[in-house]
Image (cartoon, rainbow, N blue to C red):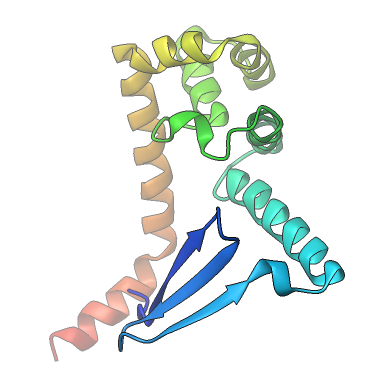
Length: 162
């Protein structure tokens, strides 16, 4: 189901502002500098917690989740908010594709992928066999989700055409 988009968020990092822009054209602004220190500390930790949590959303194994969380921690410690420029698969699915192609277990593949430099990971992601394996993994995950939603989907389609 599509979410109703009542507002969008903008962050003005140099000014320390969060601006909420509503669909009616109005805006509300929070100036972080005016928050009490305790609220600012809580907001920082909430944001970091959310960022780390997002890194393992949808993962299928603890090993994959741990690898993705560690990857984001490393990225943040290196001063990079966006995951390696964005766009590429997370370490977990990259390792899963590598394991699938090599017959290694997931822990071995994760250890190998974790040791690679960003450039080496980029090269690995660019390999056509890896791309295909990632696509197969994503397709299998989508099928599992679709199968889980099958009954609800049948009900919806039945009511749609009444």
